[in-house]
Length: 300
Image (spheres, rainbow, N blue to C red):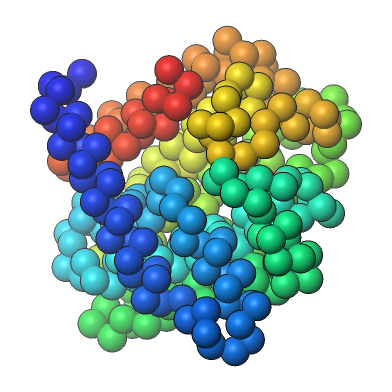
């Protein structure tokens, strides 16, 4: 366990990195005054409402772990990931999917702007994510293309979208080990894995290094989703910032439903401990270790 000073330094670094991401996102997103105004307002509303910026920070610190030759490009890549993540949240909240009226303590995009604009804002944010990631003339072409490949694979039918479909189709069914792992690894874990991998890929495309970083990210992402499942059962909506107790109502496939609450906590802890050990072996300066531990702090 680090000293109080170390913990304060980490918290300060987390906050300052999130603030840098927020400022850069503000610059990269279309202005509210640019036509079509309703669309761009919805995009900004859904992307600039704070949040932990966990995926963006993983991208920036993943790049730092691998060498940190292109910090400005890593920041833009982090913003691209946040745009893609915002798109997934807009679509997740729609009545046809999770039907959630609250996001980060505010009305969801479709509540604020209507379903049609929300749907299109999500579409536009996904496109903007890849537009941003395709830039960065200083980064070697092979690295940039590799990073785009990582993110596009994570966002596609075999991973994120496929996981969402399996989540929808699993509603009301008896949860099985294979089913819950399929959904969680695709719907959540792969994008978290892609976040740290994209940052690293801007620096190196050495296969063993990238695969090790990616696998650590998947384990951290799985822990993150297990913690989310626990919070849906036991959390405080005013703290979490979104509607809770909805998974049981909809018959969602969750880790606690399949394995029980105590086992879920133990699994999240074991995954985080493994991530910390493996990232330390890659030369982490301690911040990524603390970031993985931060995942668990939400249920401590």
